[in-house]
Length: 345
Image 1: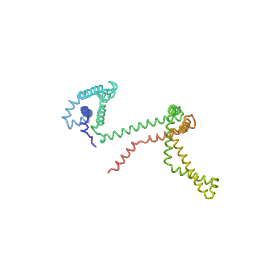
Image 2: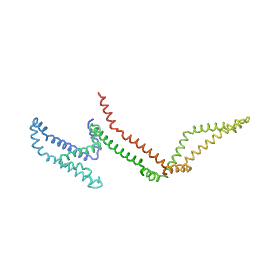
Image 3: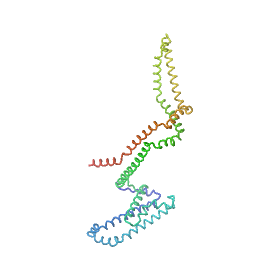
Image 4: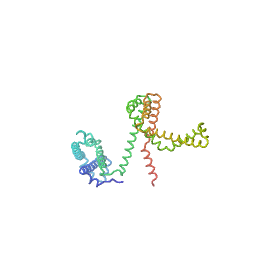
């Protein structure tokens, strides 16, 4: 897909003059880099010999008038680059784009160093071209996302970032695991300095959550709970000798037992429902608060068994995270691309 140039975005932009300047500088830097590349190639005996053989007039003119005075022509470009750099610096100072006026040269160091007329420094002008192109891309004036060169650099940039970030992450996880296994104070510090100061808030939050979960679970399984209570009471009634004797009373015995059983069912169901409601009520959850407090205090106490278990859980969790981090997605993407290319006729 070719490069896209959005004229509408350019017209709608409130910084048309700045966009025009950026486009001019992109063209100028491109011409300058092409000039440097051509002159470098012309300086080799092989290329110069080809021009002498096939284009002798051009070779004589270029060699005597331009190649011999290459530094002079390059200084013309440098003068324009420096003028634009100083102009942008003044604008940045007036707009207060940076906290200090002298920050601009440090932020745009490649523009300044690229103006040094020495071969290796001239290559830094490519960074100026890249920065200008990216700026136009962000403004929507041009669209490079469909070009092959953009996809090429985007893929390998992401691959580079993935490799570096994965190595840093694995190194950090290894250091953290080593500290856990060597029983350094970090585990205890996490408990005493991070968790302990939030004890009251944890108790309050967990209590409210327990009450909410209890009420929601009861509402969801209300009929199941009532059926379970009914079956338990039925078994208990059948196993109770006194109720069996009551059932033998003529005429009214069976009716009394059935009524008694129904009453017990209603009472137990009411007790369960009231208990759940009391637990979930904010004004009646003192017992839940005390229970959660006891659990959290037990966790905060220095129990060797709990510490060992926490260390094992943490180490295993770290290993799982490391396995996930080691997955190199860019290699899988590259493999799929090669597979699709191989399948194409």
